[in-house]
Image 1 (cartoon, helix red, strand yellow):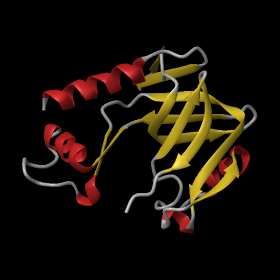
Image 2 (cartoon, rainbow, N blue to C red; image 1 turned 60 degrees about the vertical axis):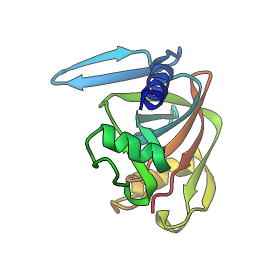
Image 3 (cartoon, helix red, strand yellow; image 1 turned 90 degrees about the vertical axis):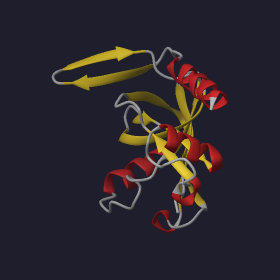
Image 4 (tube, one colour; image 1 turned 180 degrees about the horizontal axis):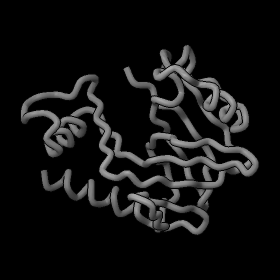
Length: 166
């Protein structure tokens, strides 16, 4: 359990590291405060807003666990009891309501799951194509419900890939 807590602390520390062209905002009531956001790397998140001209994406970073780590995190959060297992060996933790908005690099490719999220294969598309599909998605099981892996390089989003969930 101590190893798990140390690993979680490292993840939280990495997520809290600042980048120069991103913002994180917490909204409570009428006030919004800006704070440092994301370090370079790959982050699991729930996308909230996709915008073009200028290209940007707003998302809520979450922790994604699989296998035994999913069970340990879920037990620590009181979601399941010791000895139980998470369905599909997946657990997503969202301790914060903060959102991050980052600019999207011009060359960013987006991988969207085929078959409306029912496949593990992704179809590549430009960010502009993704923005159109994302805004048109009305089905709760479509693009808006899945998590995404967002790659950040030098404070910009450089890749987005939809995560399959059974």
